[in-house]
Every structure is written in structure tokens, then in C-alpha cells.
Image (cartoon, rainbow, N blue to C red; front, side, top):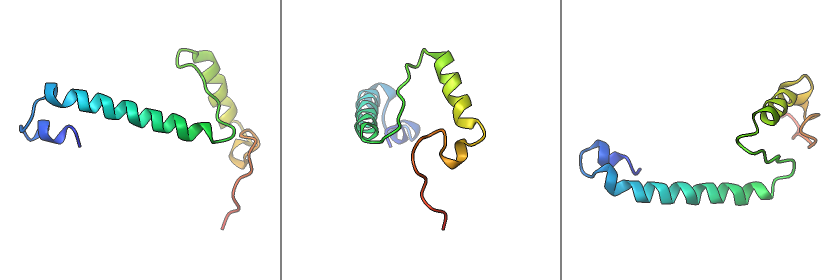
Amino acid sequence: RHMQPVIDGLDTLANVLPALQRDTRQFARRQRTWLRGVTGVEWLHPDAYDAIERRVARFLAPGAADGAVLDRPQPPLV
């Protein structure tokens, strides 16, 4: 939405960049607000590579697909 005028030659990147940055921050804030209400969310620092790697491995481990690792009930299959 922000980049289309730049692609079409109707605006410059310098003009759309502030709105793009603002909207990205607002979107990230809405995501954080929504995720605070979701049980089982694990917040990991982006620089904690080892912790992220271990969490992904646990998620991909056998049994993760049935919710055993996520510790939350899965909806019934229809």
C-alpha cells in the first residue's frame, strides 16, 4: 500500500518512508497486544539463538503436532 506510489513513480521513497515506519510500528504493537492474551506464548529475545533453536526443536519433536509440546488443547478435527 505504501510502496505502490513509489513503484508507479508517483511518489518518492523519502516521502513514504515515515508512514511506512509508523504503520509497521503500529502493526507490531497490535500483534504484541493480541499475543498477550494468548496462553502458551513464549517470548524469546531475538539474540538468544540457542534458546530459539531449542524451542523450535521441541516444537518440531514427535508429539508436538498433537499439542503435547504446546500444552494447550487442540480443536477437534472435523
